[in-house]
Length: 416
Ligand SMILES: Nc1nc2c(c(=O)[nH]1)N[C@H]1C(S)=C(S)[C@@H](COP(=O)(O)OP(=O)(O)OC[C@H]3O[C@@H](n4cnc5c(N)ncnc54)[C@H](O)[C@@H]3O)O[C@H]1N2
Ligand code: MOO
Image (cartoon, rainbow, N blue to C red; front, top):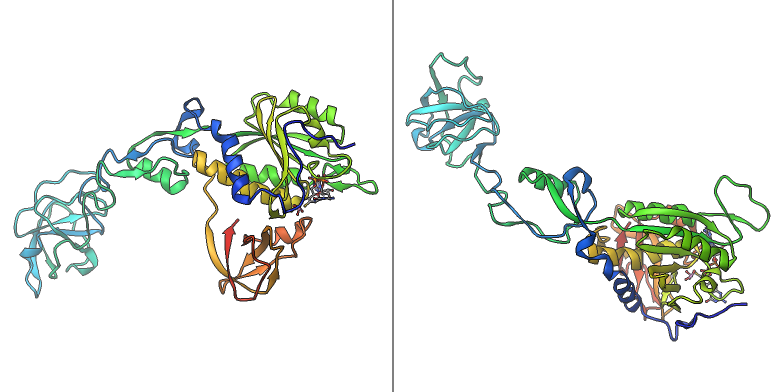
C-alpha cells in the first residue's frame, strides 16, 4: 500500500543514489529563503548568544583605547634610569579611570593596572622591583629607587588589540561569549543577527511510545524526539514538538496542518523507506516532496520538499540515521546560510582499529577521540546503536570509494 508522490521518485540502491554533496546542496537550496532581510533582528548582546551576525562590524574605537599600565607600579621615562638604578621623585598616584598629567623628567608616578600611562612616560616598573616595594601614602613626596627598564615595558599600547576602523567581526560569525565580549569592549550594546529558525519536529511510528509510557510487546520508546530536539536546541533552533504521529497518513497531514503555522521548517523522522506503511511518504503524496536515497550510511533514505509551502525534511527513523542526517545536511546548511550554528570542527585523527565501508557510500561512523590523538570506533556501523552513540564525541568520515582502512590510517573526524 505504498503510494509514490507525483513530484518525486524512489531510489533505493546506492547505484542511482544522490551524492552527499548533492543532497547537501539541495538542502541548502531549500532553506535559502530563511536568509532574508525580514528575518533579521537587532538584539541586546546577552540575547544574541549563538546567533549569526548579519553585517561586518568595524571597530568604532581602538582597543585598548589609550596606552595603559599592565602592572601596579611606577610609570617612568625609561631614559631617566641608569643601568645601576636611579632615585626618582614620586608624583601623585594615577588610579585606573583617571586622566593623568604629563610626567616630568626625573619623576615616577604610582600607577595602577589599567590606568592611563601619563604623557612622557614610556614604561612601567612593577612595585615588586621598587625600593621601597610598597606604595607610600600619597602627599608625602619622597623618592623611590627603580631599576633600569626598557621602553615599552608593561605598557599596553593603544590599538594593540584592534585599531579603530578595522573589521572586528565578519558577517556570518556565530556569536559566542568571546565575540559578544568583544562587541561589549567596543561599546556596542546591540547587534543585528539572523532570527532563530523555528522547527516543527514530528517523530512517527505506531511502534514508538513516549518515554514514561507503557511498553507493550513490539514497541520501543521514542529516542529520536529527544535526540533531535536537543540537538536542534543546542544548535540554537527553536523547536516545537508535535509528539509522535501514528502510521495513519491522513492524521499526520492533519497534525502538520494544525501545527506548522509559523514554522520555518518541518522535520519528521521515520516512514521514508520501503516498508508497507511509510506514513511520511504517504502523507506527502500530494505535496512537492521527493523521496530518494543518498549515498551515505547511515542516513540513506531521505525526503525533501515542501508541505503546504513550508520547507520539509524527512529523516530516516533509525536514531543514529536521524542524528547523522541533522549533522550532515541541516546543520551545515544553516551554518552557511545564517552563520549559526557554528560548523563542526573538522580534525584529522588516526584510526585506533581497522574498518570496512560500503565502497559506493560515504560512511559516517561514530567514535571517541582518545588522549593520544587516535579515534576509537564506538559500536559498529548499524544505525540503531544509540548506546554507542552516547559514548561518542566525534563523527568519523569514510568517503565514498573506500572499502577498508587499516588501523593508523588518518581520517577526518567532526567534533560533536
Ligand atoms: N527494504 C528496505 N528496507 C529498508 C531500507 C531499504 O532501502 N530497503 N532502508 C533501511 C534504512 S538504511 C533505514 S535508515 C530505514 C529507514 O526507515 P524509515 O525512515 O522508514 O523508518 P522506520 O521504518 O519508521 O524506522 C526505522 C527504524 O527506526 C526505529 N525508529 C523509528 N522511529 C523511532 C523513534 N522515534 N525512536 C526510536 N527508534 C525509532 C524503528 O523502530 C525502526 O527500527 O529503513 C531501512 N529499511
Ligand atoms: O540509512 Mo540507514 O540510516 O543505514 O540505517
